[in-house]
Image (cartoon, rainbow, N blue to C red; front, side):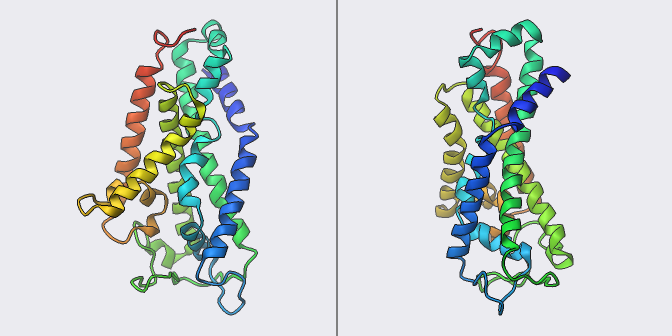
Length: 267
């Protein structure tokens, strides 16, 4: 198990696609700064870097690209292995169930790392603007906001915004991991890598649209609230975030375990 896992992790992380992710994250930062109603570089209105990050995520295209950033590193690697004959080598060198387990772990870690890297790049880029490290009141564009981020654990921001940043990073990693596995699950039934990479993005956007337009769907049905919990106005709790991640993870793993069986895959 160690050998195949080490090989899969090396393939997942020694990957030039992370450069594409970095470039897209910087693009999101630029777009977010341009669209943000709060001047970014004004010395008269400095914000805490975490506050600036949250505004940038709201007004950039990060929410739209997040699922793609998760699948881009390694979610389509199962197709690559099958098309390039790597599965034949696997059958000779290691039990197939170990390869499948290593693939699941590598895809999840790479997807989580893709989102984590994106958030860190946007946060670090925001340090170029005037900052106020002592601010503990969240400045939002909504008049309904009372100085605390909406959604789960908003109180962490008033204690120390860096604590809340850790929560956002953990949420981004979880989102990236489960939606990368959703891409892997799609790759077991679809042979087009572009569909594999785009399918989780479409899934997230469609559910988010339906939740925003329907009075019958609760906030639990909006996947973007698990990624950007401070964007959820009301009714979104930590349990909802766990339910979202758990459902996507469970369905994805079930599909991979059933549809990527050795007997079903042509070696």
